[in-house]
Image 1 (cartoon, rainbow, N blue to C red):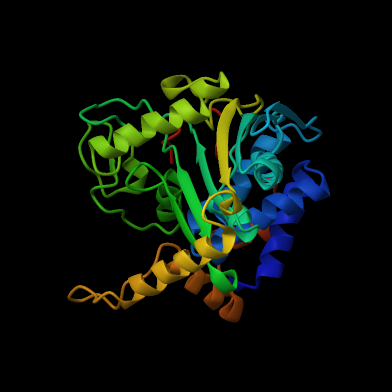
Image 2: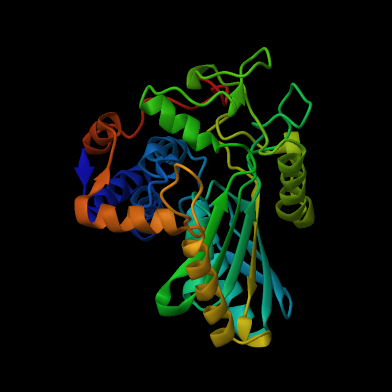
Amino acid sequence: MKLTKTALHQLMSQKLHRAGLSQEHADIVADILVHADARGIHSHGAVRVEYYSERISKGGTNCTPHFRFEATGPCSGIFHADNGAGHVAAKLAMEEAIQLAKENGVAVVGIRQMGHSGALSYFVEMAANAGMIGLSVCQSDPMAVPFNGAEVYYGTNPLAFAAPGEAGKNIIFDMATTVQAWGKVLDARSRNAAIPDNWAVDSTGNPTTDPHAVHGLLPIAGPKGYGLMMMIDVLSGILLGLPFGKHVSSMYHDLSEGRNLGQLHIVINPDFFAGGEAVRRGITQMMQELNQIKPAAGAERVFYPGENTEIAQRESEENGIEVVDEIYQYLISDQLYINSYDHKDPFAS
């Protein structure tokens, strides 16, 4: 099933609003979900709506949060999310960070007591669209085995980076510190598709291609991904006085309870360094030079980071966004949720 961005946004926003979010917050969450689906990042798009709706309906997301930004220095601050929708908190905190960086050159803004915020690329792209360089890191509940370990400790702990080029084009990098994000496994489950054998392990610690058998995700590049997981948990957890590692609350343990996640936005204003025009020119040159590199045997060409999602977005605007039939049927149904997630093992089917 293919839908226009407008149609998909409307279906998701309606469902989230019916679950209990204000229309304003439902629209913002839907904006970020459409951002993901339009760019082919389906693991962070419509597949998440039922989970959010169940948590909202059961009181695990505060639908009337008291958001508060606390300036802690000329270039730093804490955004208190009061367990509101994570997408909304992360967007508002990025707006605060951009304003601080405009005034003082650099901004470091932490977000406390938030829920899942979706694709981090959305937030760093906000910075790039404002002519800034953006970096965002976020902790998540334990789903990854540490290097040489057989039990989960860290989350997928994603990071995203964006920098502005000329003519409104940005270079964007968004990744989980596992070989793949958990949402990619959920996407494979929704399509009844196998996963590569280097994504995850089963309950015995052996590699698996069955998305329903996953009991632990693997860090990207072994010890390197393991180190990045640690760094991100320090920056978005310990630094903000929040739980870390295996102490981070599960997405699924009790959907009537709030979560206590952290996220950190770092924004750099090029005007305080080489200058905005020089940075945009350099980023554009980098993009062009990467595109001109001779491709490896069997490869079409070299893409600069984020270019593949730009292409996917253009195609989705022309041809619509692909939505799995099961998800579409849920979105148009009267059901808010079907108890798919509450008190479930995080790896349960």
